[in-house]
Image: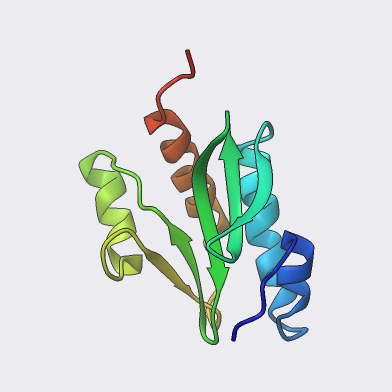
Length: 119
């Protein structure tokens, strides 16, 4: 049975040493874009909640990092996301390439914009 993570720190610590800084960069990018967000583990991966609702997830894999879900956007934004789309709702970023942190920041902000305001 797979390990059940209790915190994002514990989750990141479970990865090989060379992957941890990349995961921390992704985490920091999302936290900066969503300063009000709460970090939790949901579906056994790092998740950011805003206003009690799950907004963005990220996960480390053997050769890539994924971000979930994919936000909608204008045609130019959609075109920029296309090389990273894999399956419905998933963006995949290869670990053997520079992590597009600016794009991850914009994805996070698009997800926040698409979230309905709390009553």
